Image 1 (cartoon, rainbow, N blue to C red):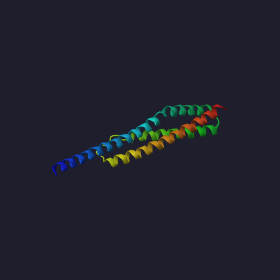
Image 2 (image 1 turned 90 degrees about the vertical axis):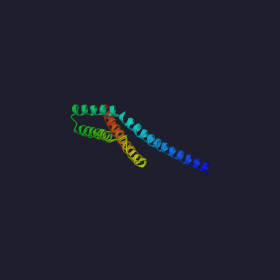
Image 3 (image 1 turned 135 degrees about the vertical axis):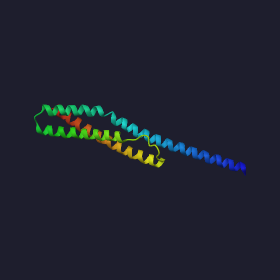
Image 4 (image 1 turned 180 degrees about the horizontal axis):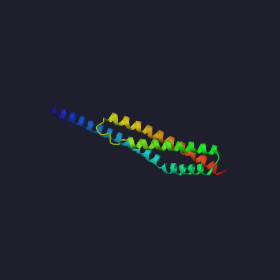
Length: 139
């Protein structure tokens, strides 16, 4: 009887420890996903600046109001996407101290959705501005 009790106790302790380790792994894996998306987004920072400079140059060099208007709108779109990224980085909390596993997972899933949306926004704004710049330069 005592032996069965000891084995049962050890089994419960093992399950509990494994469960905690599994939860930590889930949190760590999800955090890694979020950081990887962030890193991918940050790699586009240079493209944003290059396109903004080219749009600014176009606006200074052309007297065509239609081109200026489009360049201004695309520059504002790049600024907006860049601002969303900066705000996300400023507000992101990788620590999550004192929160339950469920709270951490909910937070990280929300952050993953946000940074993925920012990634899409950046992709669209860079693609649109690059296409516009290419069209204008080919004229």
